[in-house]
Image 1 (cartoon, rainbow, N blue to C red):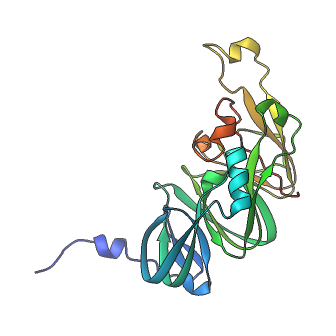
Image 2: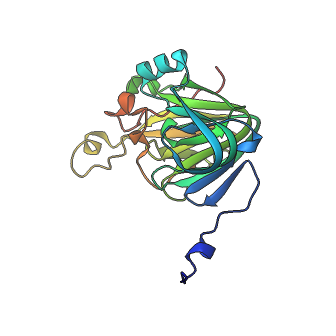
Length: 243
């Protein structure tokens, strides 16, 4: 008896020994021998070896209170042990970056996993137009280590220093330290609110030095900040990396 076909050879496990590596575009492989990691609660799809999971919720009382007040945040589980851990989130594309004493501001729903050496917290945006939305919040990640994010489709990384940069808030995934963000109101007047309008009432305007990552799907409000921004086009995405 035998099984014929290329299934097992085409989709054989990635042999990489890097701490974070892509098994494929939609699945992350984590080598647990490098130490504990944080992963989005419920993101484990498989593991080999001895891996243990502890649900940490919002990451402590302080973060839990902020999440209840802001609607932003992400439920995390702490993963420890030895072996290989595979995580994914609804077949979204996975993007891996390495921070070296740096920081990023991320929509909480797009966080998949990060090294335990990375510090994280919920921050309020300092933007001139933020008051009209009732407050904008985001998750700040800082330190040295690996970070895995998810996007719906292949994203584009825009260099905000090269030209004035604007984006639909529901498509913005993250931006890097050094990037400033303000809220811009569409000038289409009443036509933007009724049939025939553009529907792009509130936009994010970026400046400074660095990159903003935009995905080809206006859906990031499905995440934790939905509570604050559900009635606004901004989607409640914001970030303060410095305070």
